[in-house]
Image (cartoon, rainbow, N blue to C red):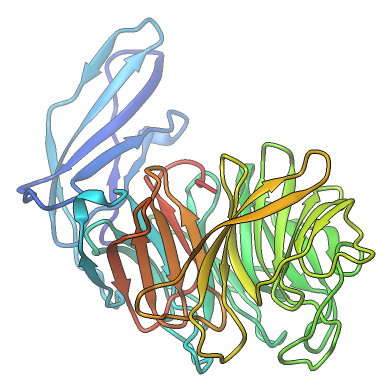
Length: 420
């Protein structure tokens, strides 16, 4: 990978307890936001092999190693330099920064997604830095809906949308590009979205039957290749709804998923009934937001008034944030909805914010949203190929444009566990 630095080193002090490599972009202008970073060192790796990630193409970086022994003694290496290469085939991303000083400095991971007509977007998974520069890219399946780093940040996983239940594929590539696998066994029925767990585990939704809008299985894949069915996503969790492509009045079309380590649960969204459910890993529905609450399997349920949902997030304060597509092929702009959510006692949900872009953008499929550490919000109008970062007052601070996007993840650093 032309923009990944590979550093191997040794130390004269013994019994190292921790180490990092500090790297800085040479001759970075005052307006440059991504000026380098700190790479944690895995001391179990031969020669302490460490990757420097998020480097701009065709650029020179100065770096040094900082190491600390168990007794507290520390050392710092002399400075060294490396120069990155070009990224051939990298997608064209256009950034417009209206208030760069208000940005959350980090990286956006996305993929090509699909256009409004359903055509395949860029067949790439890619990482864009805070300056709008593509700093990493790899070939992705056609109509790639999600690209996401595994929990430890070692591999980039990506998947095909597979909305038609016929052409599913998940693949991965190591961040240095040295290891890759297409058509990962056991995941050919996967569709729409996946999430990650500790230990390199990938969890996704897989169609459980043939045809359009059957139920799905939540499956988990371990690094050794073992694929386990955890529970069925369907009538045992929530009522289905009208299917766009199947014509069924009670179809299932789950399309977004997140794992929550704190209580070992999953949240899952479905566009047909326009609802989200929280489910224990044992398969017990805990609550439902949106959809039909009459006879809902979950103990707690609050109905909603929106139409069609995709990407979502549970915030640290308990609020629930999600992308509301709106009726298919309508002219109404898509929006971000934020609800307060109380599940103690009688479940309550109250709308506190609805945001639509001033450009009246919409996305009939996909679409994502993420609250950032500084209070900003990243909004992805996938089919329109528009990503907006808005501040806490919902004013746009930057936009990214491409032909289309899949879902997207914002990360402050390309090392360690995911932010959601």
